[in-house]
Image (tube, rainbow, N blue to C red; front, side):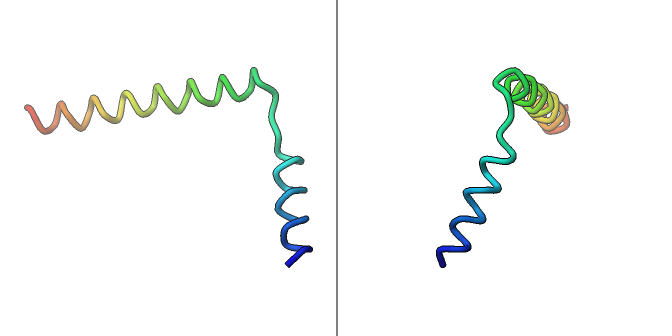
Length: 46
C-alpha cells in the first residue's frame, strides 16, 4: 500500500508543469470546449 502511495506522489511531482504551461493548456481546452459546444448547439437548433 505504501509503495503504491509513494509511486502516485512521485508521478504527481514529476509531472508538475509551470504555471505558464498550465495556463496555455487550460486556454486550449477551454477554446476546444467552446467550439464543441457551439457545434452541438448549432446542429440541434439548425
